[in-house]
Length: 109
Length: 114
Image 1 (spheres, rainbow over the protein chains, first blue to last red):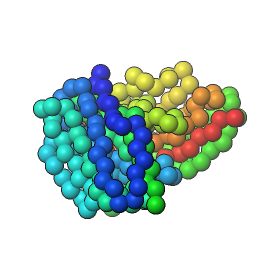
Image 2 (image 1 turned 90 degrees about the vertical axis):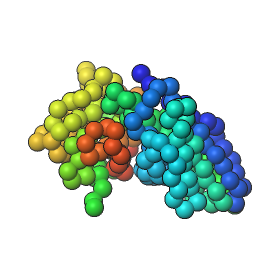
Image 3 (image 1 turned 120 degrees about the vertical axis):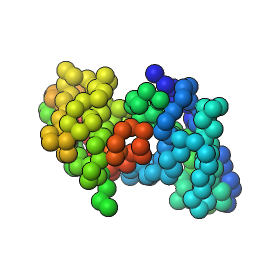
């Protein structure tokens, strides 16, 4: 099955810094989503981005499907950005939504 | 638009007891998923429904876990008997058509087996 790898596994930032999170996947996909898991465990949708670039406020994401990776950019980070960020993909056979292991982000004041 | 609803939010049971979780997907969503998330790991798919049919249950421990989606709407996930290693957050998600469309998650049920 398709493999999803996220990097880095952990990231510590000072408030105001920028960061880039990476998601690599091993096969062609027809769905890619980025989620933020809040401290209460809920998965919050950030982007649905099987290809191309999208922006939402301080966050943006780019997926280069032909090279099998996606990047999540966080600019001017805030303490409320802390939590775990997950990338999840569905392969072209229309199969399961598979998650990476996540990147745990900690933003210090 | 109402989101995915799950209940209960928290549950503590003793090993060998049974437990059931309930999920109500977003109205009109045909695809429903149950995931298990163990602390420190990414969510793992247990079962995927398309309407009331099972699309994938290859990672569901069928000797103790069961799930149903009657009438293609609400779904229940049951564990019987529970083991200590079943302690996890159980997440329900739904998407409108196939898994290629955007999935939305409920708040999850945190299960502790003691």
